[in-house]
Amino acid sequence: MAKDESFDIVSEVEMQEVDNAVQQAERQITQRFDLKDTKSEITLDKHAATITVKAPSDFVARQVIDILGSAVVKRGIDLKALTWGTPEAASGGWVRMTATIVNGIEETLAKRINKDIRDEKFKAKVQIEGEKLRVFSPSRDELQKVIAFVKDKDYGIPLQFTNRR
Image (tube, rainbow, N blue to C red; front, side, top):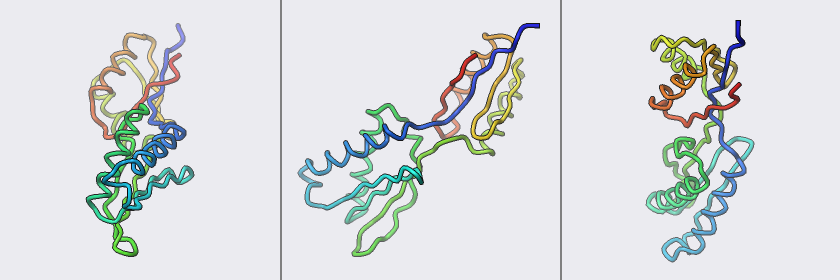
């Protein structure tokens, strides 16, 4: 019997690229005429995987988020990787918005992806391994069908297909 082929379904974001996008957005904010004197801030916490935008009003905060979004897209990161929270009132009448950076697939979503693949009756096995899924099949063609199927579905987070063997 031939050895099974496999690949991993993961959701990973390169933190260095996010850091570069935040720095680029900060430069754009200091150069834009309408945002130059607003004293808006963007901070990245790499350990907590969060981005915080602090601005004097909700409107300015949304503009800063748009600038950050365009910088993130230019760096090749999907916007689905940032999950923005609701605006919070900060001291001095300022507004703070926090985004969490998606890294890894949650267990409930992993189970849903697993169920969707099984429901399509592919000749493939799926294992949930922590924050990733490993898909096995004796046929590479079957694995390519699984990849195409998962790409067509929208799970709300960016998915990558790695570690093909």
